[in-house]
Every structure is written in structure tokens, then in C-alpha cells.
Length: 70
Image 1: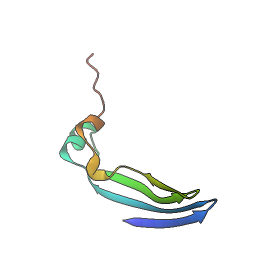
Image 2: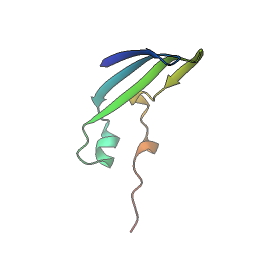
Image 3: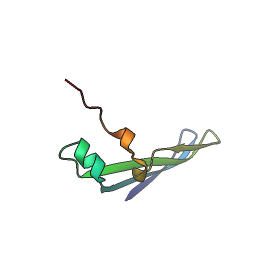
Image 4: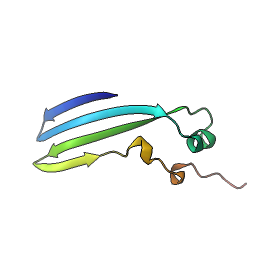
């Protein structure tokens, strides 16, 4: 895990980067994939709460690529 703290231009944001082994359904859908990465930002922007990012554990079956039927 790595973090960075940014204070500038009306922002006070902490960035977090994490990597974890890809779940089986991701490895099956994307050949050669072994890791997935989560990047999240939490803090304030212009005095308002700011939160961005989806936890790596939030990856679901819907995140798989669509396979063509051709």
C-alpha cells in the first residue's frame, strides 16, 4: 500500500493505492491477469467532502469484459 497527501488549489486529499491478487473470476475473464489495483482519494475539495474510488474487494461479476458471440 502507498499513500500520498495533497494540499493545494482548495484540496486536502489523501490518495491511497493498494494491490491484491485478482479473484478467480477476473483471472478467468482476462487471461494473464494476476493483480488488481485500487486507487482511492478521500478528503475535502473547496470545503466539501470528496471520496473517489472503488475498493478492490468491490470488483464483481459485472466488471468482467463482455464476450462476443461470433
